[in-house]
Image 1 (tube, rainbow, N blue to C red):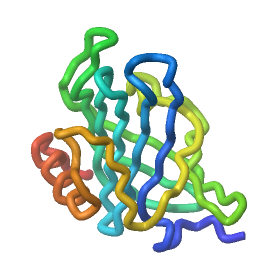
Image 2 (spheres, one colour; image 1 turned 60 degrees about the vertical axis):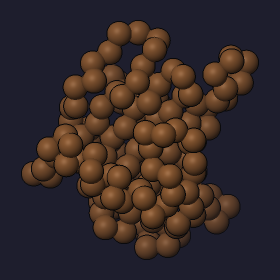
Image 3 (spheres, rainbow, N blue to C red; image 1 turned 180 degrees about the vertical axis):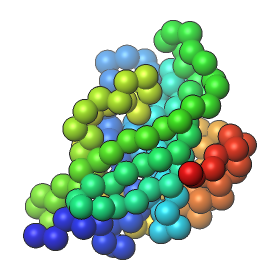
Length: 159
């Protein structure tokens, strides 16, 4: 089976972290891999956390590599710094039952929700997963310009 990241696998990946026993509801990891080579990775738990990382991605040898910058934009569980910092992450491409997912095999310490190991499941090429938060993009067509503004605000340069 071909484990390369084909152009039809570029798109939206999501993981739902079930937290429904709390009044905040579930937490979400949402990743957009864009055909331009940009990525946007969001960790969101309504009222508790909003963490965003963005930058450039590449697929190689059955893996996806992210290199960018990220920041905790909101965190109510403990003190945190809003200062931007380098974000790098690796995912293995997994194809099961004719569906693609990205597997983070290890925890990425220090990134709260974005640290979680496990699968992000492919939803589609142009699928928009609305997190209903005024600080985030409002449609799929807004994802790339929003990501570019985030990178410009944090003065990201891909070395």
